Image 1 (cartoon, rainbow, N blue to C red):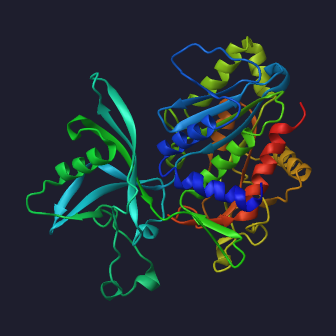
Image 2 (cartoon, rainbow, N blue to C red):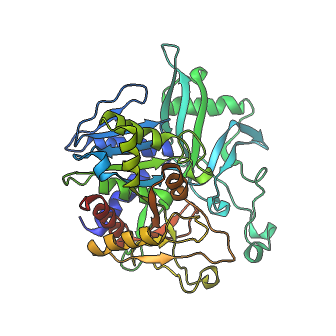
Length: 435
């Protein structure tokens, strides 16, 4: 498959996945289409695993761990893990969201993570996520919901009323200036009832049965290629669905599996990961321990397996933007379409150390993939990833890598076509290395 075809698949993946809950659903749909069957495991049931078997576990609809059981004992091979995250920064709808002001219905939002708020203005926005409701058996159930049409908007203030916007930047007061316009209000409309009726129309669930929701604001514009040679692409949620997609493609490769391969895709990375389904929770340790138990691996051999394991923490990296040279360390500029980035931080905001960096560089060279190294400016705070969290929790060697991208945390991000293919090839080499 060509690099451009890989990116088109990525864009389709993102367009089908406007919320973390939809990400997991899209992955399940892709697994169902595979020639080799994948079995969903229930955390409340006992597990019976077969060598070479393909399995996945979902926790709370938006985190997923997929694995292929190795043919060889865990104590001999360890786990080969790629970790990424399914969530992206943005806006989430509040519980009592709908309100009316000056003949307009608006929806109140809460900020999730650290989005670039100004990029949400003047976009064709809509809603996607899940609703929780009481079903016909009087039990609590959930259902995905997605509005395809442009439903919402955050209109900018005209420059005549904000004369300094081009000098000082657009600043939005988070409580009063972020509510999204939904509709022109009729006098007889009750805002909450109107919004509930919209959810009923979209979900097919009676408004009286809908008890709560997790709804994300998303941009309805589809992903696209751009550049004179279509060498770049743009979409929402590249951070970090591009890494999720690359990891999934590497895992679905049909080579013989000696060691146990794992993809762990977590929600809640953008808010610190300290939740039951985040990377700082028990999800991945629980799954790895149960894999060991199902393969009759005793506690000592499980610890031996962890000592032989390796994890790639895949999260996007900051590409050099020549309009803003002072934002970068001049000796560590990473360039779009020049290969995956090894991310290094002396204070271990990234999990990379010299040995893991050398190992990943070697896999890239074996795969014929170029690679780059990134270090943040010392006078700017450095972000972090699931890498340090998961590596510390499990006690395994890890590295933080990612493809270079522009406008991280914007509602519309950009990256390079060649890099996505490079990352998939490097990840495949990691999975395929001889034991």
